[in-house]
Image 1 (cartoon, chains in turn orange, blue):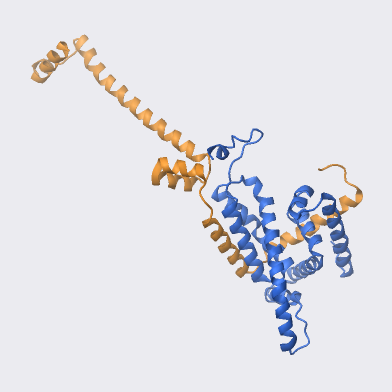
Image 2 (spheres, rainbow over the protein chains, first blue to last red; image 1 turned 135 degrees about the vertical axis):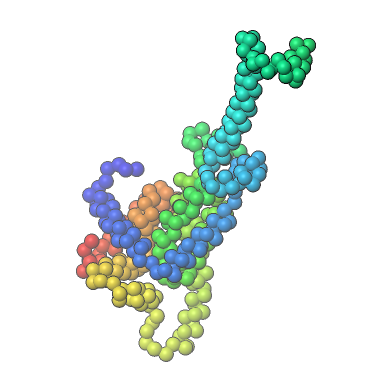
Length: 137
Length: 203
C-alpha cells in the first residue's frame, strides 16, 4: 500500500496533509452551540450502547456489585481479573484461618510435651476435663 | 456468543470489543470532523448536527459487537450513507422551498448558503486578533472551495486525507473501485489547488 509514489502522488499527499492541518485547526473553532450539541449527541448514542453478552454474564455472577465494577472498569478483561482476585482472597483467607487454628493447637501441644504448663493449668478443672476428653478421642 | 466475545473464532487476531469508554473516546475524537464533513456536503448546521447524531446512534445500536479498530471505517460508512440519505430527502424538500421562495423573495440575494456560513463566523472573528482573523479567513476560503468540489471528489479527498483512510477502505465505503478513488482524489487535489491559487492562497 505504501509502495513507491510518483512525484505527482507525493505532491498530492503533501497537499492533502496541508489541507488536513488547516481543517484540523478549524475543529477548535466550532461554536459552543455546535460542540454542546455534539456532546449531547454522543451521550445519547452512548446511552443506547447495549451491554454485550459477555459483560452480562459477568454482571450476573457478581450481581449489582459486579455491574458497578464493570462500569468502573469498562474493559472486557477487567471482570476476569476481579473474579480471580475475589477467588484468591476467599481461598487465601480460608487457608490463613486454618493455619491459625493449627498454630493455636500446636502451642498447647508443645507446652504439654515440654511440661511448660503453668501450675494454674493443672488446677483448672476445665483444662483437666479437656485433657481427659482429648485422651479418650 | 462467548466465543466471539473472546475472539476465539478468529485464529489470526484477537478481537477485543469496544467498551463504552472506548466508544465514547472514539466518538469524541471524530465528532467534529464528522460534523464538518456533513456541513461541507449539506451546508446546513442543524441538518449536519442531526446527521452526526443519527450516525452516532446507528453505530452504538447496531455495531456494539465490533472491536474498536473497526469503528473508524464503520462510522465513516454510516456517516457517508446518512449524509447521502439526508441529501436525497432534502433535494425534494428544497424543490418546494425554492418554488415557494421564487414567489415570496423580495430582495436580489440568491441565498447562497456560503454567506450564512460566513456571517455565522463573523461574530467570532470580530473579537479575535489580526493573526487569527487571517487564519479564519484562510480556513473559510479552504472550506468554501472544498464545498464547491463535486460530491464524490470531496468525499474521496476528505476520507483519504482528513480521515486518513487508505485507498481500499475509501473505495469500499464509496462503493467504487480503487482506481476511481485515485481519480477522484487527484481531480479534487488539482481543483482545490487551482482554486486556492486563484484566490491568492499558497499553502
